[in-house]
Image 1 (spheres, rainbow, N blue to C red):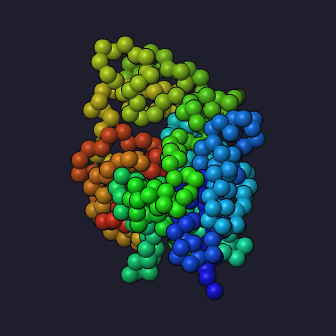
Image 2 (cartoon, rainbow, N blue to C red):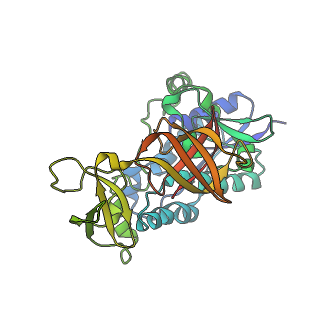
Image 3 (cartoon, rainbow, N blue to C red):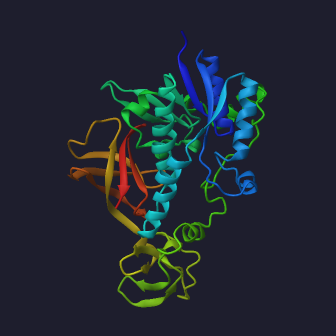
Length: 358
């Protein structure tokens, strides 16, 4: 009897080809789109779409019909608001810069979808991520880099659990992007030429500060001071939710040369401004750890670390300084270490683990 797999279908080419590949491999495939949009106007959902909007449902349903697989829409609105939207606003109010896609992966796309899918008798869930899952000689499951560095999505998957990995398939990670599009074209999938989704799905206009103000009208910090690294007041800022570490544009400071946000202090409502060299660091600490290829870090280890999506990675020494804390010392200075973002550690091609930057 063939194994049953629930494929999370976003209406894009990657998850559509994931469903196609798994069907060709003999799995019993069920397509599911996660309904995560909140109760805003229908025309807004139509227009913005994102990875799980109304247009995603239409596209995913057409692909499912083409593949002749059952298709459902599952409601995860409550989980998405709690684990993604509320987390996003809370972090910005603390002067941190969150990564909502990572939270969505762990708590919505995996925890919620996997629990519901296993309850329906499925053996696995599958996604269209550019990453590979392998079981290592130590019996642990780990995410491995995709075959194409240009689309590698392992960074955003560092905090998946062993149980989640054991029940997940990622067939797309074995192919480069242009090959995925070719497979889609040759199979006649209606989304073969659809553009990739780029923006944060619940803020399609990229105006994070306006979103936070709508969500948290009473608790958003107002204007405060820009101050230098030595404490000199340089001017007024619009509110800490408008800024992130490393930012240069939109400061509206007449300093005669480029200056950058080096730190955000929510306690004093100050945004600290410095020179380019002030944005570089040789160390960071992280907490909220998740280990993947190893059960724990038992001794200092040289690894490659990525401090944001798109960062090529820098070699560093990592060592535990507490039960849930790692100090990371880089061999070369890294730019804009940003509290609230995650640092992901790689041992060769495999994700060792990671945590949230403090």
